[in-house]
Image 1 (cartoon, protein in one colour):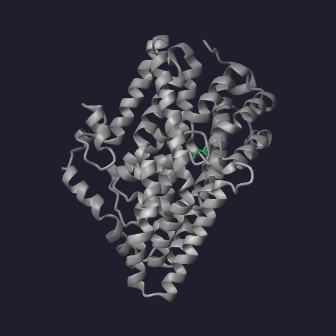
Image 2 (spheres, rainbow, N blue to C red; image 1 turned 90 degrees about the vertical axis):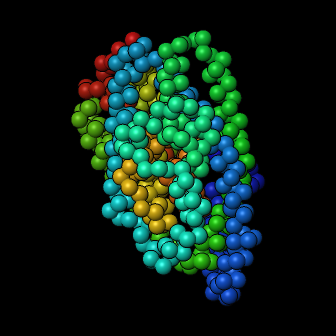
Image 3 (cartoon, helix red, strand yellow; image 1 turned 30 degrees about the vertical axis):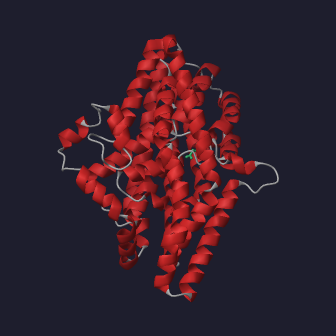
Length: 438
Ligand code: ASP
């Protein structure tokens, strides 16, 4: 998603965004120090904030077709689990275990460290007042208190189109975005069963997906300005405090990713592949560095295929399935990051999330792990989406976008290492074959 910025002669997009963050922060702090606070805030609200909104709305505009096509294609790409037999089932199970572990680590950490609570009560109140009014209004009219039974039932939509229409403003009659995701999963699974007859449908969805990615690329070109505008508005109002809070957030994500990588992967690789974690990480360093440098699971795929076959001696019938599907469908670093990010922003905006909403975040983060494109910044549209779903202002994305590239490098490394760990575990003990590809 950063590709437009990579054209030669132009500064890469992530640098432009970082510069946007710094420029917005410096301008905001200066304005706060030199000018009348009320006039500055009025100015920011009238003239600067809309620039951030243009960027955000361009992304929101395509988020429903993106999620739908990405999820259907992600599931359809896994293929008919029955045909793949053991290989498909084992891959699916390990993916599920890794993703769930990652989201749990993320949620525990963000609840313990509470990076978003580093903001003073006064600042939080200001933010809450400013950003959550509209959302709360829609929420109130849309959500009559639901019983847990209805909440679960609502995940299965009666009318998927109606759910899509209301998913972004909380006015859908049932489960909203989760129901849309369920619908996509059902269609994807059905495609794998229906087989070749559905090729035209897959081609259409691939077309939709490609077009949506282009729109997002256009929107991302505005990101440096959008981020500068959003950060200006925030720092003019809250000063340095918001930047300090951001540092806590970055630290929390990096610690979470490190725990997942070095504790969970190590334990699982040791137990199921009978491989010492040192040997495992030692042999795939090249892949980890490539993922870190490119921030793209897809771009790292050729390296991870080669290294996993050559250095870990995992046979090709396993790598070609597990790693290829995994580069889009198994992104547990991303799932962990999304969980932390969404709850962090909820804390920043003073939004108390009940257990039901936290579970929604868990589920959506796991599903988003399947629907996220393996490209730089691939998960950002989904973060915006989850924020909308739990009624936290999507403007929050402006706070985190400036530091996202660093986190993207780290989470992509975890994503790709996770795919290789699944491949090693699917292969099983002793390092030789052991799996029938059916
Ligand atoms: N850059 C990530 C990947 O390629 C996706 C994301 O989390 O943005 O795996």
